[in-house]
Length: 238
Ligand SMILES: NC(=O)c1ccc[n+]([C@@H]2O[C@H](COP(=O)([O-])OP(=O)(O)OC[C@H]3O[C@@H](n4cnc5c(N)ncnc54)[C@H](OP(=O)(O)O)[C@@H]3O)[C@@H](O)[C@H]2O)c1
Image 1 (cartoon, helix red, strand yellow):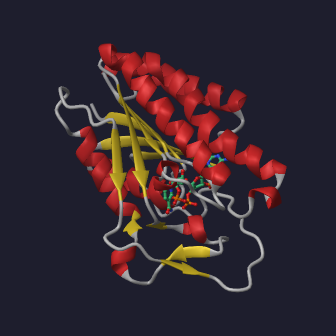
Image 2 (cartoon, helix red, strand yellow):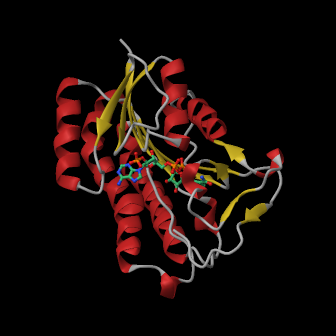
Image 3 (cartoon, rainbow, N blue to C red):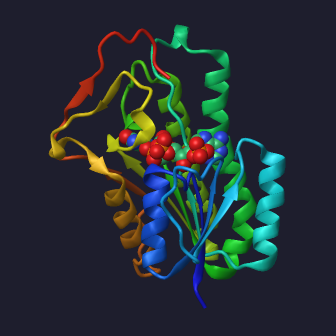
């Protein structure tokens, strides 16, 4: 029987690439996002689940439906957004949205999936960010949500390792996705200056295929070069 995974933010970027890679590696994927019109995955091993994961009541119902009928081996907490700029200029609703999506939703999903994952000795993978590992001016709130996620993942691993579960956090640096569509900075054209979503996905396949005695709890991924491009004439970021 195929192993089954839940991937949040599966409609674009890293989540879409991870879903594709998992399907190619024999998984059935429950992909969660709000809108799959932009998705290029049309596969019998992919189920689109439309849900705003900050709606925790709806999320709880959906996860119960999935786990009542399927054994889950992997949760990938990937969905996230970034609002950047001077912290004093960031809208309160955007701070709240980031905290709910990037930090609270992964903790809620992990809570809901721990019991099912005990049965499969499964893994939880969280997508944090390189910005969480250094002072990140103009990204203070975003990087704080990701730093919280790293701490959560490392602590959770210590809690669940006796049950055979692994909690793993990946901190990617700049990755070429739609994440930057509305931002004032974006990956430089130099191919060595950014990661591709597929790079993250392939590293996830490597992580989940490690033997059970090996637990990599935090993986940092950086492009070879450290260069970003900036858009002109943009007062504030979203
Ligand atoms: N790109 C980078 O340089 C980079 C670097 C480090 C970390 N990351 C992290 O990587 C993760 C994926 O980002 P990405 O680069 O792949 O960006 P992306 O292409 O913009 O993908 C974001 C995904 O999150 C989903 N999403 C957003 N709000 C949601 C909500 N309320 N409920 C459910 N799903 C929601 C989006 O789908 P819908 O809009 O359809 O809901 C989309 O599938 C994020 O956590 C981001 O912080 C990115």
